[in-house]
Image (cartoon, rainbow, N blue to C red):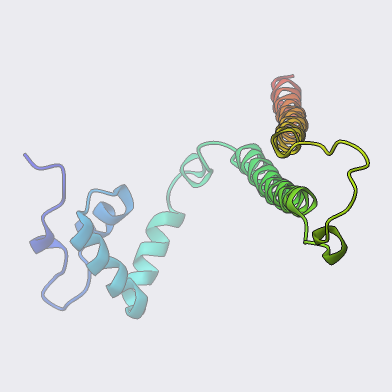
Length: 176
């Protein structure tokens, strides 16, 4: 025995939906093609639409009510999505700042040649070695990157704690 309604019995000889077809549509026992045909027919046939509406209105009040309240679930989803949007913005901003510091460090480390520096001069003081400059720039970059990720993690954990607190507070208030 098939779970689905037989599509051959969906319409009567006059081209209207049969009562069994309307009940199958209401109960959800039509396959995809049958549901599509019935929905299309209801979109232009006022007679069948009135019969279908009367059948739904005749249902007990319990059947007309939603199975559960969806407002808290939708609100939690909205909070989560807004949190993700905000964190994505902060991550993009942090990446731009890090890239700016890297470029700034590269220019300050390698610099633009100064024509006065190209002429031979008397050595006055020992200059810092290139390897030391690179090491200092790289360690500074990694320290700032580590600080940025620590701040981001703290912000994300704080936001998640707020969402958890609101969802726990909402469920206990509803249970009272």
